[in-house]
Length: 250
Image (tube, rainbow, N blue to C red):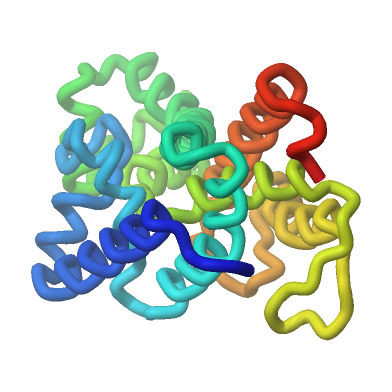
């Protein structure tokens, strides 16, 4: 894997600081720095960035897995494209992850929300229902309980983690080393990068479409992983095609 770059090392340290800090602050830290659904009262503009450095407080596995992947793939990508492009790739993939996941939540949220408006409720009345969980049954003339449940779930959804940004780095790594056999940790034989990408991303595609997680956890933001991967793949493909000497690519 080679020497860890200073940029990757800094990102690792920032993520660890946020993780320790959020545990110290408890629920208040999570509420302040996780990314909440934009219509939720807890949403703040800085969460667009801070959520990328937050991880689940319930288990250390979340941050360990993301930081391991960043360590394994990040330095090799940065060594080829340089620090500025690496940071652009990292944060743009994180924003791409945010965008696709929020879009998914809005798709779940809007049918129920629109039904409340059609039933004659004002916007502030709908938001009050979401805050309290109580509503008039007359809205069921316009929608279903499942639709209302989806709206409620989206309203209280939140995002944490570097997974989207790391997914972008992994996708970029795959473009760089597409057909090259690689030896990775925990895999006793060489595997081409394109197969590693498929192994990593196919479960997210299946989970995003079916809402069934092969990992056995229901709180994984599959669309965020996919969004980050799309940005990482497209960005690195463009750079590879237009910006670099072909002899520098593997």
